[in-house]
Image (cartoon, rainbow, N blue to C red; front, side):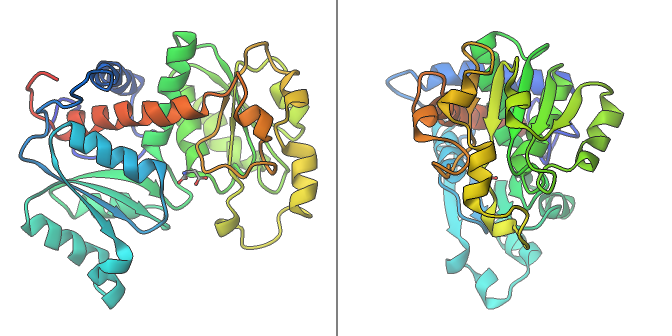
Length: 317
Ligand code: ASP
């Protein structure tokens, strides 16, 4: 076990502010490694890291791969289409097969909420949740916190708007837990069907007065230091939750005109992949306030920190 003192990273709900701070500090050190001509440290030498993804991924899969490689681990990417899962093998049998080959860390993405915790209970390897259904995506939450901390020097006291399909978003859940634990205030914004008042009740109970739900984008942006725009999760929409995509974008697309209602310099984030023109305009996504590319770069440093703290040796980075 590494210095975090935990075997797994399953969510941000279960982490303390101190643990989150430790990961972000460690990510700062690994960001520096990414700027060196030789971007490698021996922290995971001799360990095997497997990326097992049951849902598509561009950013998360590649940045975990790169992070493990930069820590000198042996890293494998398993495409579910090529694995025995397609032949009916259970997830636990698949993981047991990897364990027989001395698995150190399994990075797991599935469509099922709770699956990472389930596997973690039955595996000796470290499990990193890379997104489980609508539940959490903790490394995305951490990289968003890291991006905010680098821009503002702190997370405490920030006003952060999270806009869009909050209901189906594992990113929103991780972001909200992380932001609240580090002392930010959160505005959740979207149509009532995608951003119901009831969703905020758990956070309201844990952090009274620090989460509010608003249904107008203009109100969510007023005085905001940062805005995280969420992708409409078309693959998880089981019924029509808004009249049409045109209607949605008319009310909730983050455009330059709307962004002018936020604080000057309001940071724009999006976890990707973006639906340009639906939830965010191209002008904002590529504009001067956008941190979207920075989020991707920060993802590698944050994932190096997570892998190292969960499973690395004490050897200096
Ligand atoms: N890439 C993020 C995720 O896997 C965000 C998204 O897909 O909307 O949850």
